[in-house]
Length: 343
Image (cartoon, rainbow, N blue to C red):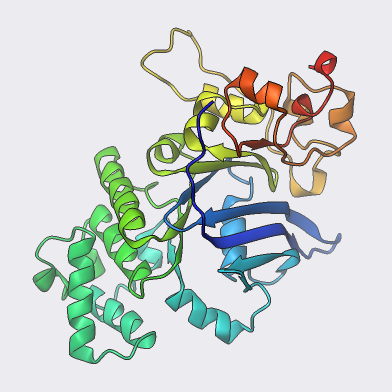
């Protein structure tokens, strides 16, 4: 059995988070009882199909759920202090100072009409007492830290003068401008080619290690998760199906959905003629089945799966040893809570 990496200081704690969207037919529950923590210097990868609730979870944590959406239950704590119920203005100040955000498309974060240096300097001065000249020096240092060549010159460039990878580095610099304790990276490498993806992943890991920043990495790319994350949470239909150390979940997935995701990743060592295919599709929010939301697509489902919703839990010691899973690995599946003869 492998050991779970130790991250003793939870920076962010999410407890039974529920997010709903009001409609004419009543509220639709997009996130349904999600719980996890992220420690200082830890990267938690959040993975799943489109519609699983990954980005909505991140937006809810940092207070960016727009009406008609709302947090309908649960708590979000930063360093033990609840932040999901803060006034909008206080949350806005917190986002710049304690929480950073890296979006999928850097052009949504950068104003094309302003130089990148002006945008960095404005962010720095909004959340600090630095003078204009000191803020500019800080901005140049940030651009150098994220790997922008000749930062003294490039700081006066406009976003369109940077490549996609360089723009993403600028966005990372913006997110880190005020040395936040927690950063959400929402699909930060999707629009980049493979070589640039590797550079951005290495950059995120290095900054996380040197600064002690807690990172929530949202992606559908298991390759990115395997390279960058310490732990991974697999989401399905607004719930966490499985969460544990990344190597453990990738090599020994327990939940049938997680196993399907891992089986769909091509490897050089695989001798199979075809990759694993998960039948069916993610259920609509208006039609989430009772019990385990994955049961209509699961080849191992039995009667209990269609009636009773499973909650993420530690498998028994015997099962953990048999499946080679680490301590702290949790799975929401009746296969690991039912009797042995039900498996």
